[in-house]
Amino acid sequence: GQQLNQSPQSMFIQEGEDVSMNCTSSSIFNTWLWYKQEPGEGPVLLIALYKAGELTSNGRLTAQFGITRKDSFLNISASIPSDVGIYFCAGQNTGNTGKLIFGQGTTLQVKP
Amino acid sequence: DTGVSQNPRHKITKRGQNVTFRCDPISEHNRLYWYRQTLGQGPEFLTYFQNEAQLEKSRLLSDRFSAERPKGSFSTLEIQRTEQGDSAMYLCASSHRLGSQETQYFGPGTRLLVL
Image 1 (cartoon, each protein chain N blue to C red):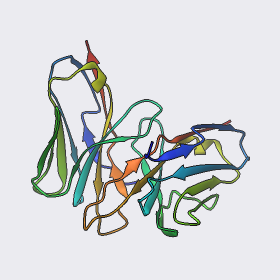
Image 2 (image 1 turned 45 degrees about the horizontal axis):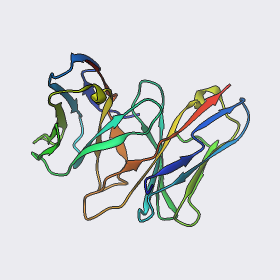
Image 3 (image 1 turned 60 degrees about the horizontal axis):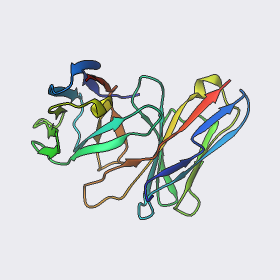
Image 4 (image 1 turned 90 degrees about the vertical axis):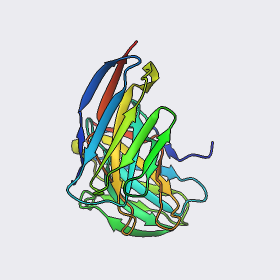
């Protein structure tokens, strides 16, 4: 099925470092969302972006909706061990059904 | 807890058996989605309900799969004659649209293993 291109695929960083991941698509979306998933659980919403160019923060997380509407990035500042998990981007076109198209995920590991 | 709930959380079955999963959405949400997630991949859309109406089905949803949302509240996903390739995490999400904004909240998922 259709998926977004998310990179990097995995990251192994030291506690306290900043992290950046991004997502690109060949199609435009009118909403971008970022989720975090831990083993055996469902995705948990981190940030929702509804407008091209929008920059939104949630604590140490910051995400931006690209101007072209074909990309988005997520930054995590001053990483901590509980940031470990898989981060997914998802694009949505609310003019249709609203179904989400997901990236392949970025696996983040944080070394204390 | 007012989040999305799914039951069972885990299901192990033998090939050829039928299984049914249940999803209870957030109470005021009129939209409900089913997704399937295999190891190392992001979730993939299966089907979507607005209230009790099933409005879209993915090509991933073979004729062995059926979903219902009889009263516009909880939903069930049934897989008949399960195959090993059906082994996956089945996720339910619910949402309520305000204008052009819609945010989906996911349940914990049902992990299916077909032996």
